[in-house]
Every structure is written in structure tokens, then in C-alpha cells.
Length: 294
Ligand code: GDP
Ligand code: MG
Image (spheres, rainbow, N blue to C red):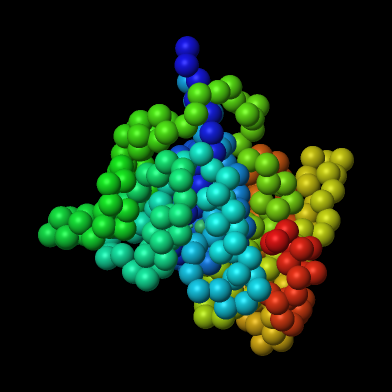
């Protein structure tokens, strides 16, 4: 039987649902999701293995205006994924009209030779009276490109999406063992689940100024995993917000993150969190390196 295998870069503007789509396609959460732009900061591999094909998706940070070194690295990451992929899924939010960042991605894609698929996401939120006008406006981003309307949230049209995507991949044997879903270390995924809770619970500058690093990971004889992680923020005022009155905010961040980590590891977890101020970390190449963001 013919077997297809290749990499697919998942690119698009911030917040269109790239990470939600990846998690839903894999049937497992590996990428964190939030209503805030810039949730995804680096490329993340997600492997889907099915009879007859294997797809190595690469989720990427959204393409927008870089405001600091971190932002520039994020746009570079998306670029890099594009250049090395066999195919590209250009994801947009069809519930609204295309914006500046969608057009920026469209321009980037003009210079890419790989096969492309336009994925119009969030169809569950598209009002019936806007279907035709939004469809036309989004297809103008990539004229002549095959397209599919989906809902990552409701898993609508996934079969059709995969039916279009798989034939774009080269023939070849699987590249990853069939039980491998990502190459990101558990320490990184655990830190991301902590950061996700910060993103969901704080506002304005705080989510963007936060980074999380797993410092300790110890398997305990009683079957627990002990995880110690540091939440870095940019300013003293942000530390106050993340810790909260009497430590309440940090407590709820920790409790929800622990639930997510336990689900991922299928094992009880003891999670210890510290908050530290590291001014200007988004501009420091050394810190970005330490956080795996280069
Ligand atoms: P990314 O920045 O492109 O990776 O977007 P995320 O996956 O982080 O999602 C951004 C927001 O859009 C989150 O609040 C998601 O829950 C929401 N979202 C993603 N896909 C859908 C969808 O198909 N329908 C709806 N209604 N919301 C979605
Ligand atoms: Mg994302």
C-alpha cells in the first residue's frame, strides 16, 4: 500500500486557532491555547500517524509586528517552518474579514514553493449572512489555492481537510515511531501549561511579559513527580499581579496547571512555583536561549 509522509507548517496571523487546530487534529493537547495573541512562542512538532500516512505538523507563532527580540525570533520561527515544510496550512479566522497580518502571511507564502492549503477556521462562528462575503475575502488571500472551511473547536470537516492535505505529501515511510506525538520535552510542555494559566488569568502586559522555566523534575518513590518551576516576569508590578493577594493568584495558577500536567503525565504531580523578576528578558539573547526561544 502507498504510504505518504511529510511535514506540514501551520502558519497564520495570531489567534486564528492554529494551536487549537493542531491539538484537535492530534486528539491530544500539546500546544497551549488562549484568547490572547502571541500565545505560541516557538515552533512545536505534532505527529499524526494513521494507516497510510504520517503528518509531522509544525505549529508556529503567529505572524505579526515584532516589538522586541522575542517577537522577531517568533516571526523567524514561522519563516523557518515554512521553508522546510513539504506543505503549508495557511490558517485564517473566517468569522471575521482578513486583516493586516493575514495579508502579511499571504505575502510570505507567495515566495514559498511548497504545496499550500488554505484553512478557513472558526466556521462555527461565521454568521450565515456573511458566508459568501467572508469566503470571497479569505480566498483572495491565496488565489487558486485549495481550501477547506473547518471548526477546530467542533472538529468539523477534519476528514475533508485531511483528504486534501495527505495527497500533498510525498510518498515515503514514516519518519517517527507511531507512538511519538511530539519531540518537545515534558519539562517544556509542563512549563507551557503553567504559562497557559497565567495567560488565561491575567491581562494587558502581564501575559506577554511572562515566561516559565522548569527548574526541577524528580520522580518520587511514592509515584508522584515533583516539579519546580519559575515564572519570570518583566517588572516588579507584574510579580505582584501573578502572586496575587495573599498568594491567591499563584495558588490558582498552580492548581489548574497541576491538573493539566497530571492529565498529560497520567501521574500525580506536586507543583512548586516561584515568581522572579527578570527585567527586559524579552530582549536578552541569553535568557531566550535558556527558555528555548531561539
Ligand atoms: P493561535 O494563536 O492561532 O494558535 O490560536 P489559538 O489556538 O491559541 O486560539 C485562539 C483563540 O481562538 C482561543 O480562544 C481558541 O479557543 C479560539 N478558537 C480556536 N479555534 C476555534 C474555532 O474553531 N471556533 C471558535 N469559536 N473558536 C476557536
Ligand atoms: Mg498558537
